[in-house]
Image (tube, rainbow, N blue to C red; front, top):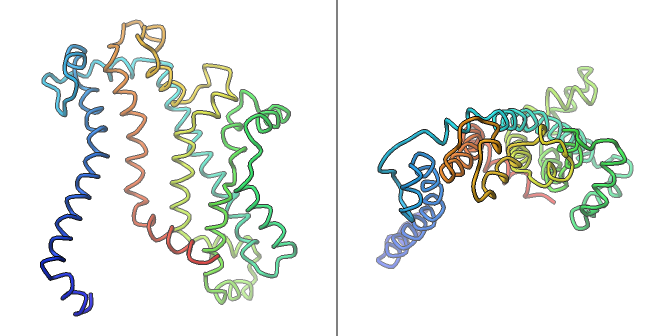
Length: 294
């Protein structure tokens, strides 16, 4: 910070602004965190405490009955494992296809480049809609298939544009050196472009993963077999039920009616929270670098 800027913010008005700014941000942060803390506390609370106390941040009696009911549920465990596998495979496929399309579009001498980019931007404004997409998935024979959860969203236009812009800013001399050494385009992409693009690729890997993990409409539309349901379908079934039975969760023990709803939400949220810290160092850099050039 320059001396002039430091002097400006070191005035009484500047200090008041700092205090108000900090208090405002702390308040906004609490509004975002408190609901999750309440859900987390409710997942360890007894049924009596949940029904009698309207709000609490720490249970008076800690119990793991809700988690025991969930982990003993074959339907929940199967849905959780399915969602993890679909997320990992889907993120890999979507990120790979996006990079493979973004790389040639980053070359200004590509024939038909403007037309292709215009079509990509067109899809950002106008989408086919739910019914035409469903009919296409049906005609391709993807109903009751996990591919229906991945392929219709394989390339996100916004992600494609940002990654393309990032590729355009990479030093062309490095690519030319690789070509002189005998590398083809795929080798240049794999050994030169991708290692230099970790920030933007990590950022959109997180976006793709969160999108697949939280996807509810695709399983609802394309998966009729309940044994193939993902975690979000189970989450909807649990939270929407007025009262849960052992049959709902595929267990022999009647589950706690309210606590299990909190526990399911916590388990569905934790994997995303655990993944974010590993990608956080790339997140801001990837978003900023790829978006400054049109």
